[in-house]
Amino acid sequence: MDLQLTGKTALVTGASRGIGLAIVRALVAEGMTVIGAARTTSAELAESGARAVVADLSTPDGPADLVRSVLDEHGDIDVLVNNVGGGELSELRPFFGYDDKQWAQIFDLNFFAAVRTSQAAIDSVVRTRGLVVNISSIGARVPQDAPAPYTTAKAALNVFGKAMAEEYGGQGVRVATVSPGPTRTSLWTDPDGFGGAVAAAQGVSHDELLAGLAAASGIPSGELVEPEQVASFVAYLASPLAASMTGHDYVVDGGAVKTA
Ligand SMILES: NC(=O)c1ccc[n+]([C@@H]2O[C@H](COP(=O)([O-])OP(=O)(O)OC[C@H]3O[C@@H](n4cnc5c(N)ncnc54)[C@H](OP(=O)(O)O)[C@@H]3O)[C@@H](O)[C@H]2O)c1
Image 1: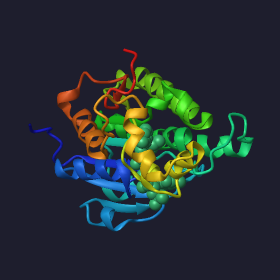
Image 2: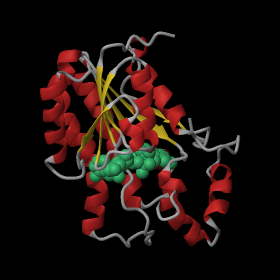
Image 3: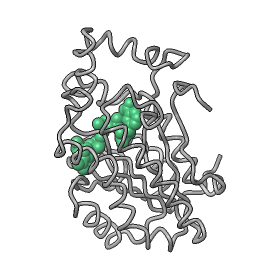
C-alpha cells in the first residue's frame, strides 16, 4: 500500500529509542524527511536515515526552540508526533507520595511537552493541512497500574488532542491520540527503570515480571506490544488514506483494555 507520504516532513519527539525510534524508522521507510529529537543521539537514531536533533522537551523553552530550528532548516511540518513521555518513574511511590515538584516534572514531560510543541508548530501544520499525533497510554483509561501523575497527565493529553482536533479540523488539520498498551521498550526492559521498580515492588525478578507482564495486563495472546506495531499504525494515520481518522484515541494494546 502506498501511504502517499513521500517527500513530506515529520518531526518525532523522544526519538532515540523505543516507540519514537520505531516511528522514525517507519516514516523514513515511507520516504518522509524525518527529524527525530531527544536529549541524546543514539547510534540507532543516527543510522535511521532521520536527522537527529538534541533537545530537552521537558523545559518551557525546549519545544519552541526545537520547532524553530526544524522550520528554519527543513521548512513546514506535515506530521508532528508528540511521542516523548515516561520520565523518572523508576522510584515507585504511594498514591499521594509524589510532591508538587514531581507532579510538575511528570506533567512537563507527558503533557506540557506536547502542548508546547503543538503550539509552536501549529501555524506550520495549518499551512500543510497536516497531522498531530499524541502518544498517550492505556493508563489514561486504566489508571490503577501506573503512577497517578503519569496516568493523569496522559488523560489530560487525550482531552487536549480531542479539543485541538475540534479547534483546527476546519483548517484541514487532523489530531489523533494513539494509546499503546505495555510495549517492549526500555521503560519496561531496563532493570534500573520503571520495569525494574515494578518488579521490586511485586517481589519478583525483572525477568519474571517481563515474562508475565502481557498476561497480567490482560493481553489475551500473552504477547507484549512491539514498538513497530505502534509505529506502523502511526504511519497509516499520517497518510492521506486516513483522512477521516481524527479526534479519537486509538488504542494499540493487544486487547488489554476491555471496555469498548
Ligand atoms: N513502553 C510502554 O509500555 C508504553 C505504554 C504506553 C505508552 N507509552 C508512551 O509511549 C511514549 C514512548 O515511550 P517509550 O516506552 O518508547 O519510552 P523510552 O523507551 O523510555 O524512550 C523515551 C524517549 O524519549 C526521550 N526523552 C526522554 N526524556 C526526554 C526529554 N526531556 N526531552 C527529549 N527527549 C526525551 C528518550 O531519549 P533521551 O533519554 O536520550 O532523551 C527516548 O528517546 C511515551 O509517551 C510513553 O508514555 C509507552
